[in-house]
Image 1 (cartoon, rainbow over the protein chains, first blue to last red):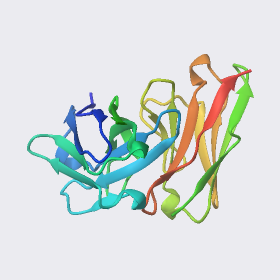
Image 2 (image 1 turned 60 degrees about the horizontal axis):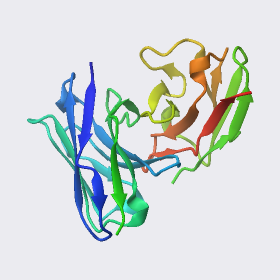
Image 3 (image 1 turned 90 degrees about the vertical axis):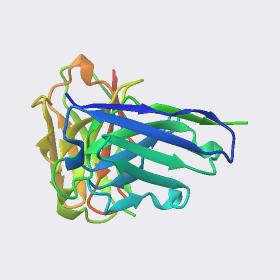
Length: 121
Length: 108
């Protein structure tokens, strides 16, 4: 069974930094692209970033470039998202999600339970 | 970026009725790279459809997807009580991948 477990969320002051992690199990992690998707309270889904299995292709939402950094460690079956210069509008549940099988299949076939990030003074 | 517009915003139907949800793209979506998700309150989204018309593993056959140019449709043939939720479409043909704003299917 595919399992994705996010951690690292919490309350952060504006301008602060945070590192989210996602522990993956139940599948061959190094075979799949991985992603972060966020959802602000009461709002819709927003794609954040994607990384291919070998970390050679990395994509970010245009509005988030420069503050967000996605990375993965295939030896540890782990995905990370570093967020710097946090703003109130970054408050959201951040989901780790697996890409579909095959090349360039950036739909999301498995999701974690989400990690809440709250940016407030 | 490709903008996805979902309609209607809310669909009020009774169990057993047919639900038709629309997702219109602002430009062509490469290779029908369009997915549909279901989200219930307090839960993560669940993949229903990918490639515009392929059902994900374990998804009942009352869910179906179709495409015509830049118009995509999710149909639920007969609503079950557990189908009342919010539905999102997502395109993954051209970066940045984008979601529609969602359609809420509520009990009438």
